Image (cartoon, rainbow over all chains, first blue to last red):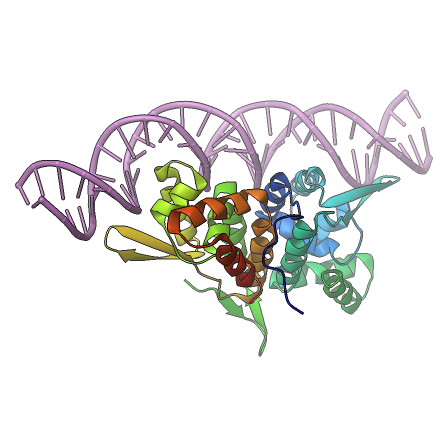
Length: 138
Length: 138
DNA sequence: TTAATATATGCGCCAAGACGAATATAATGG
DNA sequence: CCATTATATTCGTCTTGGCGCATATATTAA
């Protein structure tokens, strides 16, 4: 099980702009809270708004930022917009995001957000917690 | 400056400011190249300057930023300042940084920087590569 | 002391981006 | 059609932080 140390021929190609965008997206606390929430599954804007307790335009603008960064995807359902996590196709970026979700998921803010969301959508907190934990391990 | 908060009996939680600073630090390409270079070991400012091919004040200011972020440490040796990586004490931040170093280390820019550094310090490229690869696996 | 080298910092300018407040757009129902 | 609800965007303002350029500081040697 010798490991190759002369690796240069087929280097993985993480695009610098991909990392640039990723880290800028992760540089905001509100966006990290949103991503941590979406780790539990698809959530509609009004519930993100309700769970985080921040102004709706603020949520909307951060969601737009995350959409442009390719970290979330949206689905319209009548009046509601449901957002979900979208893991980067790039392997390196994906690993970084997973590590981030794991770290952020343990924050008290994330736990509190999930708790509030649990009340809003009538899903048991333990289910949301389990889904969030599961998300970063796959 | 406190880094960790202890909420429940034995549950360590990442302090938000730690992640905030980490991601801001990682949001710059030059800083990521510097960190990737330091993954090979301690490097003096003039060699970082030489390897990246960027103006010395630019390097110096980014190093100051990384120092304030707690990601690098400096050691003076006569005229020279040697910088080295300093892994965050926070477990979550540490995992994120490791994943980042692994992704960045595979970039062609990082490989090229190590190659130039190899010429400057007369250390075989394969040694630098091996050290960099080793750094993010521990 | 002065000179030389290595490193750090100050200044001016500029772009990204966060926020509050107001408003615009989209979809549905009456 | 109009009203309502959900979501998105625009505007003005402010802060952060990047860069180039010049200069300041630190250390060593002559």
